[in-house]
Image 1: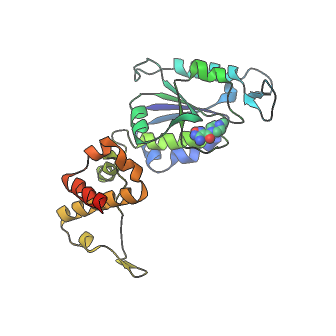
Image 2: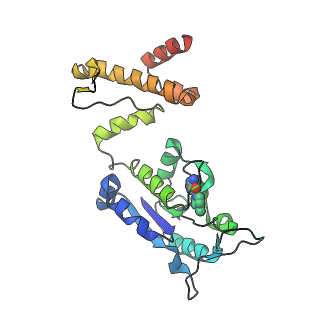
Image 3: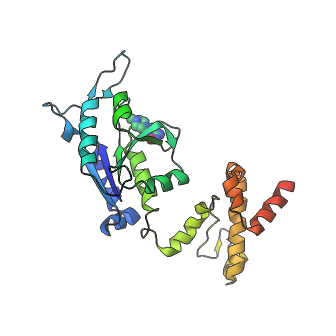
Length: 252
Ligand code: 4HQ
């Protein structure tokens, strides 16, 4: 999978992309990330990317022409990996569909991507209208640019590429796969500030541990994110034992 990023702050990306899981995926060639300076597609002496908003008001707006040249230029360098025959183009924006596990999986299946990271008050609307396939938001708050959302998306995507996350880890991923929150985790020492590790985790009884984790995942979800348990697809994926336990909880 290849991800191309368009930004006026390309230097924000390098240390993150070298690190940890994403770094290893790139090293292995499973993931390719190209970070491009939007100013390379400007044509004036000052390499300007912004201008005053029509209609007045504060702030500056990113001007359309460099974006159109950049997105079309990068789309041409295309991959056979996409149904459309060109990369899927995503604008990071609070107006987008909220990024969640389902959206990450969907985008991981889109093949190559181009991520547009805006700054200032945003990008001229005609960029969205002409070269953007989809807007994606990482949450309902306002950031100063799309660079951190792009990194969030790249990290989440990298975890969905086969071969990136090791097998042990993918068991952990099952937790979101079934739509519930994760169960609690413990490691040494056995007692911290008088709080002991649950006995079952020391028992060596793997079936019992599996059941405990399933029930704790359910309990955590009901306590912290009850909205997730209202989704029919989540309820459908509960184990028999989880369904029984939830029934019990809902009657009390
Ligand atoms: N932005 N999720 C970029 C965001 C945002 C978000 C605000 C995007 C500023 C220029 N992007 N503009 N939340 O807050 O994706």
